[in-house]
Image 1: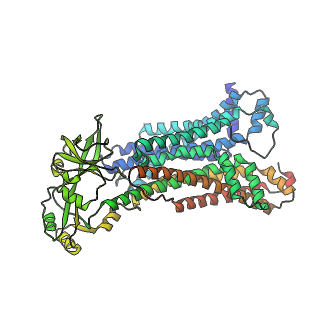
Image 2 (image 1 turned 60 degrees about the horizontal axis):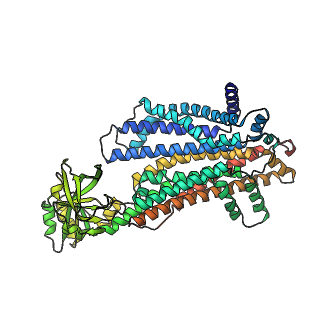
Length: 624
């Protein structure tokens, strides 16, 4: 029987190759991207440790995660509709004696074969694209110049294994649904499809939704800063997107009625067509939902964090001018600092960046950004620190100022730190700062910052012309507070925009393939329905306009669901920022949402109209 099922699966896969072309293409591209990013991750481990290496690894990891989810989402959506359109075929197999388990295994075997073919294709593409990826990363400033990607075996083996795994995971629900087809389905000819929400689909959707809510609630109650990390706000919303997609038939009904509220004849006919084919509606709304939600999240979440950090920096920096010395030392006695302090009314606060680490209670050593300040009183005068307890002006050689994120320390506690030269010291907590968005460094004195050299001088109360002249004479650069903030806390950071564009562009490529394929397939399957409309007196032009209007309506529903998912994600981030003491106005990336929705409409509507144009060729009575 296994041989017979394999033969059936192979023939079904070949016969339905057109319907599964979108899933194959998306999965092959997904495996290709996973292979190339894993090769990039393997190459990045050989780079010198530092912020650039960490950022590159995070970028490649995020791209790999989004590729996994998007490919799985497209495969699941495509197979779900493919199984639904084969009900008569499965019914005939049931009449011929095929059991439920055999049908389910046949669908899973089809998915496995598709996954193996896509994995082989994707690995070949990924290996060929690896040098291009390295060049693109270097050109975009996301990797060092000359970055090269070799081709070790394990990334390709891992990527190959993901192909069939994604295919099997994405078709699990569809295979179960195939096994539940009854023999009488062989007699079914109805074009109306209302029973879409099976118990399993409903439970899976509610479970994912509950899981997302639980994860967010735990983070808000315990560590709100976790919701502000890039990996969290990029990957965590995928739970919400998957839940919304599974529940989309239930959510689509009220939205369809809302968007067609004026009960005139044309909207009524469009609404009836959309409501009567909920599985077809869900097949189109799912990729639109994915595209809009990813665009809104990938653009809106980093922008929200950047805006919050910029707002916090604006509220913290109280200096009139910020100087960047060309040379200096960390003891505050360099010539430029001495000259600045001689100006009338000047409050001068030199500081130096120093690498250090904090040893947590369980012995874990966590690297932190440190700053050495020679004059704590001047620091308090030029920087409005978000003090939760204590007084930063009391900082001395035996103490430290740090944020609440380091284990919620109390003033007077002893904290173990690892200095830049590797020495370990136990310092008393002089003051505790509120967490905010995490831009507050750990403050120490120059004695606890061996080798640090002054890289920033905050000046307040002195004449700007005199300070600028002194800076110029000592080879330093002087910037106004606004200019310095724009340079260091810009909401339009080019590197951040390039990172977003890299991930979002690939995600939109997947969804564009899925949208075009779904629009063509679902409309082609309506040949008999469209023929009956023509036999009832509807002209071919009216049929084409009906298909265009219905497709546009369904695309709008998907865009609204994606916008709702984006709003939910950004609202949780807003709540986390409020818990962190860094509230910012909640703003949606309307431009990105509107552009993505428009892109989806420009794909779905022409593809559906072209398929309808082909489906209505010839005489209506000849349609089969």
